Length: 168
Image (tube, rainbow, N blue to C red; front, side, top):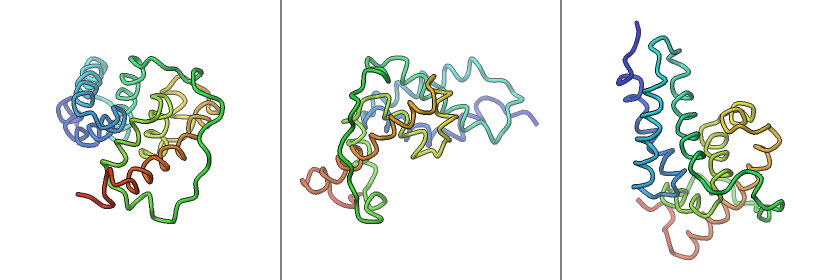
């Protein structure tokens, strides 16, 4: 049976909003604008015969494309050298809450933020992320080097008392 657009998008709104918060660096107004824009674009392109398993990825792709369309920096504008490597204690990343994650994401350039969201948080393949972002796989791999900067910023904000560990 064919699902309506409302059924397709409605089942993914919470996950898409969390993604929009990450991409917008925790800015609720920016996240809402991004979500509305991407849902509007998805509505225009929706066909009823879309594979139910692929709907989530299809909507996530529209979210990333909407985000990247408006950013000022580009994948080739980024510095060659990324942040120094960090080795956190096992489980540290999982112990941090969404506020730390969203705030830390705001410190990163837009293109690495999009790559990190797709590959690390949504578990997309490098090839799929590269396709959505209009890059080659090597470029996506380079952007993922910012994961260390993201983690370091999250840990730093927790240690500095800006946000508490496991805060609710």
